[in-house]
Amino acid sequence: MSSWKDNIRKVVPYVPGEQPKIKNIVKLNTNECPYPPSPAVEKAIAEQSKNDLRKYPSITCGELKTALEKIYPVTDDMLFLGNGSDEVLALCFMTYFNSSKPVLFPDITYSFYDVWCDLYNIRYTRVPLDEGFKIRPEDYYGENGGIIIANPNAPTSIYMPLESITDILDHNRDVIVIIDEAYIDFGGISAVSLLEKYDNLVVVQTFSKSRALAGIRVGYAMANKELIAALEAVKNSFNSYTINSLSLAAATAAANDTVYWQDCCSKIKVTRERLIQQLDALGFDTLPSSANFIFTSNKNINAKELFEYLRKSGIIVRYFDKPRINDRLRITVGTDEETDKLIACIKSYLSK
Ligand SMILES: *Cc1c(COP(=O)(O)O)cnc(C)c1O
Image (cartoon, rainbow, N blue to C red; front, side):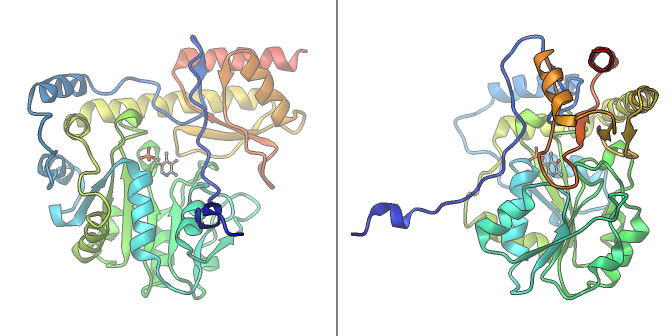
């Protein structure tokens, strides 16, 4: 006998890092910024909440776009805003990856990419990173239905120079190439300067990491206006108001406070280098990081055991039980104080 159960769509979802409600925890598992957002954000939200929440939010998101146009070499028809870059990326997959050929992305990368492919029935091929966890541009020369690369990559933290992206673009003029730049502000150079030359390039960024606003859910795509119009049409077939007015106000304030933003990124970079040095001294092998997290291993330590020990001690990091990376931990760069606690805890584990 048939059942309503036959008609239910079954998917295997992406699993984000946990958000425990435990007090005094050192939370280094989801790459959030350890510092609060710009003080201008709180003011903007308070101000906005006095204005008309009765009404739908702005359709054009004009103020936020204006703020972003001051930072990036784009015009407002080259900008698309969404409810976190996860939503922007999901809509990009739906809009740009409609070939019968497989989409390419690294074997080790953001684990949402294959989830979206499965959701939309997009074929894909995972391209192995080299032994040093680097992307080899020549592996992306073959026929494909599109390419998505996180740069810096996650969870490896490794940045691929713009020449390599140019190389991939030069060999792929007939498909869309998406560069997911969630971590670009912590050490890389954005591919946004390549938009002028490549009409098949899409650059995606977020307010969640470097601008300390994971809670407001705002992300954006930058591309030529034809690609952006296609993305808008798909979004408007789904939900016209993906960003609420409070989030719009918050993101606009954060985007306008470039001094605070740059300062935050610099502090995180300094702490990151300190953390890597301290781990070096304890025999860890950490990949070169251009992100606000590190990816580290120690051949004398079982990563899962250390992960569990840290967790019991109130320090949460990320462990992926997956081939090639199950001997590593991904650790978000926190404040200096959090870093000291982490190092002390690792030392106590080592002296057990
Ligand atoms: C964090 C992250 C995102 C998504 O961030 P949002 O909070 O949805 O903007 C996208 N890509 C990568 C690689 C990330 O690590």
